[in-house]
Length: 130
Image (cartoon, rainbow, N blue to C red; front, side, top):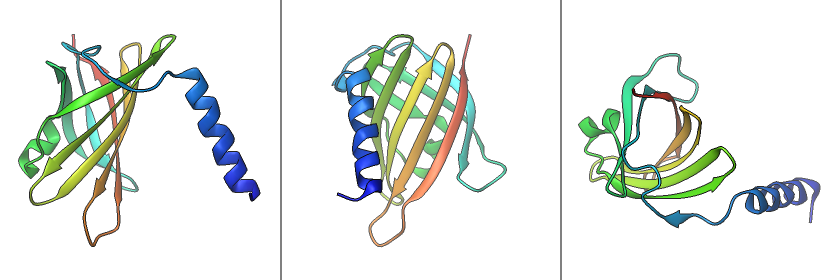
């Protein structure tokens, strides 16, 4: 095993030991976050509201591209909750979401996965709506 692989494995093991396994849950239901959806490397993006309701996750910035809402899963440790979801668009493929909520701040990545195209990483930074 080379050094990079060993380091990646150690980081993955450490993260797994801090957070329990992801599970389908309604832990974030009723919460919503306003922020910006921005493609990695860009300096401007789209206003976005990320919401959790009835065990489903939705990004308002992705509505106009035909992305659906999706079931979400969470894992919590201390004051942090991680979430993941996969939203789909018939035209644009899938967005694979990985995020973390700490207090009232949400940080997430949404990786666009399309057959025949390179993956595109997007970021969302948002604060909880009051």
